[in-house]
Length: 84
Image 1 (cartoon, rainbow, N blue to C red):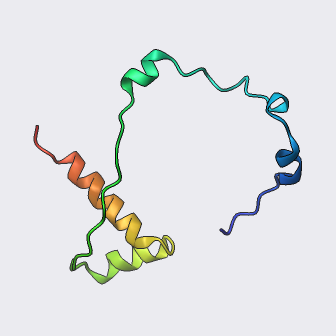
Image 2: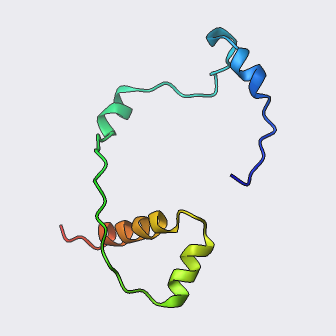
């Protein structure tokens, strides 16, 4: 990671459950659980896809996980265009 944390992790690790302030976390309600969905990750497939150089360069500039980002972009596109 290129971001540097200013968090004092030794202090955090030494805290007990009672010392952690969770007052800003809303409670999980029945409505939350009624609206939630369980999902199981799908095993990715390796496929050959032809893309133009500019598109590949852009995704590669986003970071080392560019293939994951490309797959996520395809998933968003497919989900947005599914017919009901």
